[in-house]
Image (cartoon, rainbow, N blue to C red; front, side, top):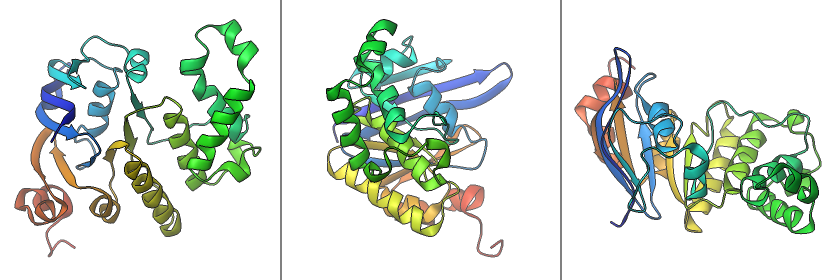
Length: 251
């Protein structure tokens, strides 16, 4: 496996709390890796370390062989890492198209005046529409984002992340709160992005979604990695069953 992302003995302490404790794993180019665990296991904290929101207390995070330590979110995003958030917050007063145009600004509008001149430039609009087509939202590009159902807001969130032209995308509970039909559409979208060459790291509590999408799964519990393996191996892992999936008699 050719590593794209390497998490090497990474810890994060918040005063007396160890949110992550010497977590290590790697993610290969073109892979879909699942990150699961109970609430409070440290999953979103790890996303925040990868994307530069917080620095790690210990350990190293490398992307394409480059150490990310000390780099801020904008630098890391420019290197090719995009992310979505568990709670989607589009610009409610803007249309679907305008939301993606704003996201394109990370690479197109280095200064405020440039943004004012180029916000609706033909090349920007064409690229935004291409991204909306990619996630299945082109037909509603003129709808205000606040009027979208949750499933479409999740896809808009992915389109905004894709506007950064990432090689790696981090998805934080993309199926959370979705109906069965919306989940199927989301799984299909993520799988299609992966077939196009996108590498994916996904946090998800919905086990059917994780088991269907992911080639490998890493399991965290109280900030510690307790298991790593294929969906079949994780499903049968005694420590994972005890900590997260639940014993048969508990079900």
